[in-house]
Structures are given as C-alpha cells and as structure tokens.
Length: 246
Image (cartoon, rainbow, N blue to C red):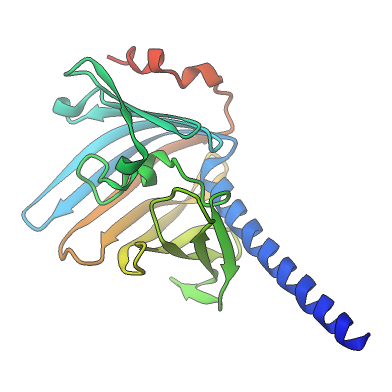
C-alpha cells in the first residue's frame, strides 16, 4: 500500500511538472502574440561583407493566421507571406503569382535571412506541437529564468529536432533559445534584448538569430511598434487580400 502511494505521488508530481512546463511555454508564447497582434518591424541581415534591411508589416491572429507584408527595399516591396491553419502561401508581385509553400520549404531561409520560413510565419506551434520538460534554472542578462527542453511530439511535422528555451520567471519573456536539427546538432541561437513596454506589455524589442557554424552571420528583428488584441477578421487573411497590397 505504501509503495503504491509513493508511485502515485511520483506520477502525480511528474504530471504537474509537465503541466507547469507547458503553461510556462504557453504564457511566453501568448506574451508575444496576444489574441491578435499587428506591428511594424525591421529585419536586418548581416554578413561578413554586406548587410541589408527590410521593413515589414505583420498581422497575426492566434496560431492559425499570419500575414507578413514587405514594404522595403523597393525591389522586394509588395511580397507577402500568408498563413491559414497549416497552409502557407507567398505572393510575388513581380510574377503576379501566388505560390503555395510545401511543408518541406518551412526549413528554408526566409528571404535570405537566418530565420526559417517557419520562424517567421510559424506554421508549427511551440505550445501544441512539442512536448515540454523543465530543466535546471538559469540566468540570462541578470534575469532568473526557467530553462525548458522542447521535443517534437510523435508524428508531428516540425522544423526542429529539439529546442532549449530560457524564459524569464517574472515576465515570461523568451530571452534565449537554442535550435537543434534532427541529428541533435546545434543550428541557431536566438537572443532577446531591449525589453520595452509596447501597447501595455513588456516584450524584447530586438531579437537576434545567430547561426552556429557561419562566422559573421546574424539576423535581427527590431520591433518599431506592436499593437495587441485589436480585432482582426479571419477574412483579412485571404489569398484575395494579399493581391491587394500592391
């Protein structure tokens, strides 16, 4: 009887531990998304011999809808990426064509940056598509953080083989993430900086992605403005809409 109680206690503790890890991830994800979000941002890509900037407008609604509009430079102006549920399209104004992106392209670089298509359009969900486990706490930039391991759920099509994530305990900010491929090799490291109040919530306003094996390469996302929880109709995220931005 005593052994049974001990086993039940261990099982219930393990379940609560897992649930708390998932709740931490959920809170951090919601922090940057809200129910909806719309913003203006700069994406700056740096290479050893050159750098470039793109200005982007973004609209997101939950985990199901996303739209990214490139506003500059002029040669890329009007390019749009649209996500509805698990489907992603790309509108190329120079070709006047809508291209549906297959899941295999989610691992590809987003417009030559160090972010993947999935990182920006977020076909996969860190909340729903991964199993979460708490590791030992860590400290990032003087902030006490939860450290979590994210492993893809069985039969789930995601880009990464594993994520190691550090989330600020006080404000649930994702400050540090390591991305591993299916073979367990470190691919990218992401850091969040310049925490500021935007539309009533604290968020990292500069996010830096650095490849593990490409010296002098990095990409930064700099948030100029973000609005959360404004009403956006589902019909806004349509193929017809993305052709109208030009």
